[in-house]
Length: 387
Image 1 (cartoon, rainbow, N blue to C red):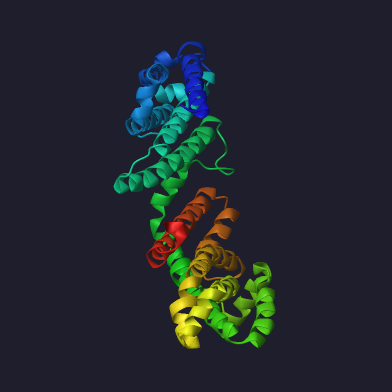
Image 2 (cartoon, helix red, strand yellow; image 1 turned 30 degrees about the vertical axis):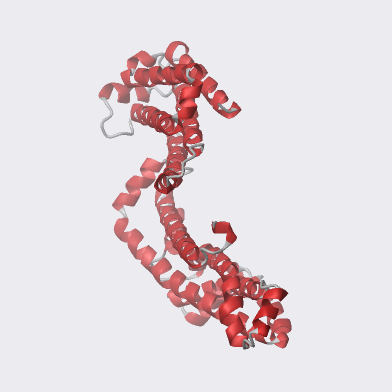
């Protein structure tokens, strides 16, 4: 085992022993004995530590099974701790009464033990080496999910355990509850901001940047004249541009789409110009020996060589477009939109609704980015970075 894995085993062992025998579970002085599920978790933790040190070679040989088992135990411990706080729907009355006393040192050491096991499980899964492509694909999906789940678990335990005011930082469970109760509002905002302003502005900005790059590639005069202007446009602050766009195009999504066009134009322009220049001189000379015209050279050689640069701009713009549209809605919009909802709900101190909108924006941006990455993989499979 690596040093980090041995450290995590030692950390899980120490915190598990402290939770089981030394520290009280709550401020009332009750120990782990008041929660049978936490007793089971601490016992499983110590068993994993013992097996890990005693059968090190066997664990390394069966990393996949070991990683799955360790992750399962860590998630069981996290769920038990959250249930003890009175968050889970099936929390017993005894646990709810104990949780009202406030978590003690035993609760936090058990939380550290669960977190150490979660980290150890991810380490085991990440170290799995297999030629099975399906297994590798599954691991690429499972590992980020487990990692992300633990971020939410830590967030939940800290906010609930330390009684952080909901106005400052709501817990994930409170955000999820607000999300479930506000799906209609979230959908209307998503449709106004993403499906209209972002997608339309993104398409127009990227297409115009690509076409202008083709013109610049054809003319050295345009390269010297338009590139500095494009650089100037890219440096314009959103806060200054958005109110002007609202005055020009009105309060509806058209003004937000205009802001998105401004933000996405220059990255596409610069990356496409750089990509069209990526072909080396030997390849260009070879096309000349074939008596290829400018159009043939562009379509057969230079555009394929520029695809990685173009997709790089598309991925960058996928996040810039969403940010630009949301920020632009702060300066004038109808009574719908993700930016409008964030600004108004902050004023009403409904921070859980703000986080629900942020979650929708994050998921939408991630899915959008992922789709572009998938298309890039299909179109540039020949590139060395995918081999």
